Length: 72
Image 1 (cartoon, one colour):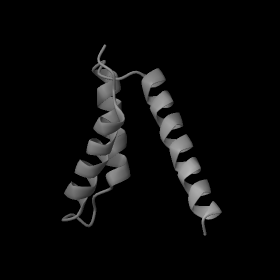
Image 2 (cartoon, helix red, strand yellow):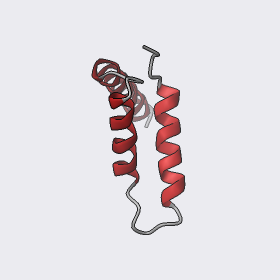
Image 3 (cartoon, helix red, strand yellow):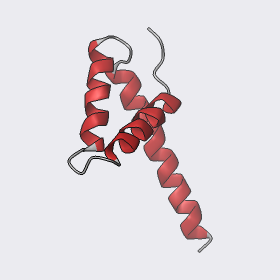
Image 4 (cartoon, helix red, strand yellow):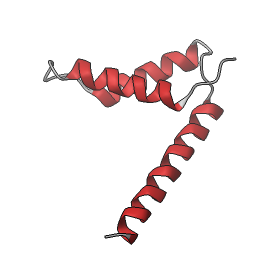
């Protein structure tokens, strides 16, 4: 199974945000959730991969925030 990457997740989010710009009824979060659900259904990603990726992104965001607060 191919590995689902941070770059792919960022691309999904960017595409969802871009398509929502012209539509006041669009919901980028729902679009990303649907795209991730499809990737899971099609075997392009696993829940283990996604959980690890989200854990990694959360940790990186926390560390970045801590660094910014330390230098504020």
